[in-house]
Image (cartoon, rainbow, N blue to C red; front, top):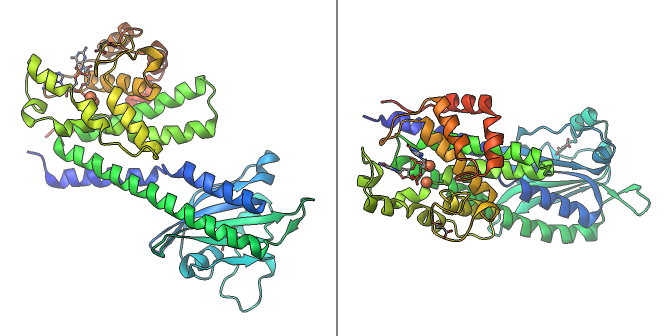
Length: 389
Ligand code: C2E
Ligand code: SIN
Ligand code: SIN
Ligand code: FE
Ligand code: FE
């Protein structure tokens, strides 16, 4: 008998893990750099508001970055209080335009905390702090723009007329960010739904496939010299999107899904609908995560040689890379684990099977990379063990 308490614990832990994956990172990066570009700010940071907490999410600093100095950037969280500049803006929903943070007018409610300056050796002077307000007047984030530069690169104040444009921009950004957050929470609910459908198998399986896929992508990106920032964003998204590869199994009947023995041809034909069912759940073309999850769901049973399902002409490089990755990690996980229809294979046999299938079922470049990361693979397997009761 499965215990509900344990299931609940697992679901909570997936939730926690997902909140740590900031799949809105690239969105926040571009909001911040666009805003800085609009007012020629040398540096800036991005905070997210979460109840009474401010999360410091993103930092950009052209001076430090171009001088190859370390940005000293770590995420941190602070209580939202009116005594800090960002807290003041988050709570009041108002803009603060300060000419020199080291000379803030006496009697102001807020003070500047120079800790980051001390760590980086950078000197903050002018600072424009703007709330990201949604149409229903909720402040969901704070943009902090630092050191406006004039044509001769002198630090100047932020001009009042620029503030007007930025507030408009911030309103648009707030809508985009809220949308991205909604997608993320929808995806979290989908994973929970798949888990509840098949709690004995799915929880640990999806976590392992997500983790193996992210690691394998990282190795591939390194080998193929993908820009490291871009690779990091893709890796984080893939961690989630890969977890959803089998979400279409929610559309397959229990008698087939939980059958103890081999499937009949008819049952297997029914089972083969799960990629299409899954892909149809991801319809938001605007969201990178949706696009990625849809592609993976649709093509994770497509073979390198063009076989597999769904039927179609795609083969080799025409099959999306991330689907090729998941097709390998999914089979690795199926072979190395016990299923309702099979026993777990021992490791040697699994490695042999994968090597033999390089170039036919799987992308040979990916198989070679995967076989080179046995240690990481085994530690992931240990981290997400199957449930036994
Ligand atoms: P799954 O359990 O996640 O398995 C994913 C894939 O791992 C399979 O895709 C297959 O490519 C590979 N795989 C699993 N077991 C073996 C094996 O013993 N030998 C080899 N060479 N490959 C293996 P496939 O075959 O398209 O199956 C898709 C899904 O259909 C499976 O997902 C599973 O949910 C279900 N399924 C497949 N065969 C059976 C079966 O005989 N009985 C039951 N009850 N379900 C089955
Ligand atoms: C603040 O928002 O109060 C200051 C942030 C910083 O120290 O850079
Ligand atoms: C298939 O994908 O199942 C058949 C091969 C093809 O048409 O690409
Ligand atoms: Fe599948
Ligand atoms: Fe699977």
